[in-house]
Length: 253
Image (cartoon, rainbow, N blue to C red; front, side, top):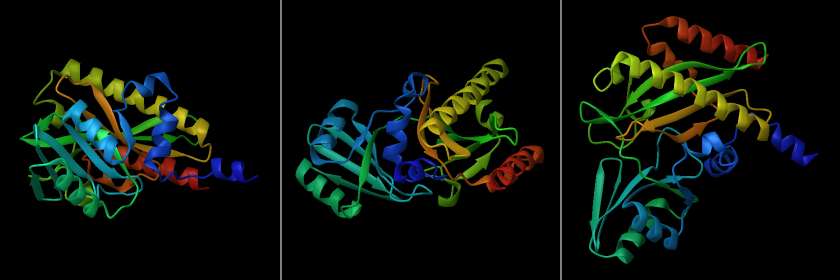
């Protein structure tokens, strides 16, 4: 009975549980950056592999506590939390400082993606996917999130700017390429939602945060099972917001 109740929950808070679930789907797995549990040895290994990683709380929202970590030279390490950046000349002092800032809570390490930028500011796309009133998964909204100057997170609640997706893409891509990527995001959203729903049948909506690397490969940075629907009211096309809210209300009945 306990297992049934667990699987019927509407919200999955642990980023680790969501990542593990999605790794079971071939199509979604191809878009998930290497993600592991935080430890001293894992941090050392992943910095050696990727040089830049993100250390993030296993449970948390709005980008709070997310840390960008880099290995810039043989014995030089830096990390940024908020607007503050710290530098170290050896791994041990770097690790102890990082440990102090994480307050020994449960954290994950994720391969860093060098995101495409808009006016020198990182951005990603929130993809809203919901169960329709008829019980069919649909991608109901896309919105761009641009990080504040000098910040590493794009979240609106941490100061990020919300923008129409096509406005973000037009500075990099042709109209046909933009349409192709939007269709890909739509499909990836539905695939992800369907698979996560198999593991956790109580879920009725998800918000995928998808960033693009310099080759325009989409990466699933995070999946939220209780996404904020009100951000879509910031779009000029209010029909998107109305649809998102209609589906959300139907799921609450």
